[in-house]
Amino acid sequence: MTASILGWLAITSYLAGSALIVQQLRTNAIKAALFKRSVQLCGSLALLLHTFNIYYTMIVPSGFDIGLFSILSVVAWLAVALLLVVTVQDTVECLGVIVFPFAAGTLLLRLLYPQPYLMSESLTPGLDFHILTSLLAYSLLSIAAVQAVLLYFQDRHLHSKQPGGFIRALPPLESMEKLLFKLIILGFCVLSIALASGMYYLQNMFTQHLAHKTILSIIAWFVFAILLIGRWQFGWRGRIAIRWVLSGFILLMLAYFGSKFVIEMLLNRPM
Image (cartoon, rainbow, N blue to C red):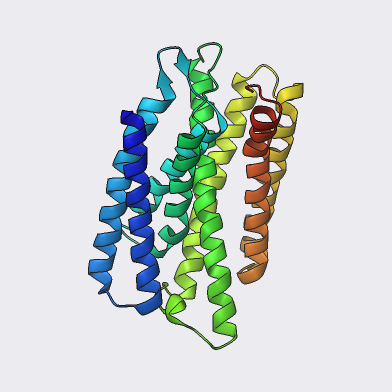
């Protein structure tokens, strides 16, 4: 009961933050400083409630829940936490218009489908590190994907010379692009560590139940590597960069969450 109440309160807080951002994007009615503090307050409250919900739902007497919706909830939690950290220095509160509803959605799915998928055995510290870095990489690159989507709409509106309230509320295009590549570089580095630790600590990353995840993750790693090389050597930016970012992100999501969906939801067995 406690976990459910915390989950619903967190969802309400996330949606309140989302509504605040939507209102600001539509009317630009709130002063920038007040708007930033309000979004940070809603996001921080939701994150705190989300934290307790994760604690009560994932850590159970019979083991540790690594089900699809539980892991999605953790990734969303990390994405919100990273976004709130970034807002301290950069004016990127508007990213919450996508990140907050995503976090609320993962909590809702966890509440609607509470059946856990427990680990059959305890993990070594090395595997714990691999899982943590993998989730952190997914979260960083998730925010980068959100940033890329907003950058696409910003670029499209500026080229059409019809910047509306939504576009005026965003930081300058150059600042958005710089932040995008900062997130990609950091996410790429963490993803590299995650893959390296997996290859070191897992006995065989290419066994039947891990092969698809490993192969798709490696392909995604190459996609982001090519993007960074293209940025450095050829100055890739704009829609070219956006396409590469979204392609890499989709591959990563298919690598982990696609396989978990098929195995847990369709085949009805844990990974």
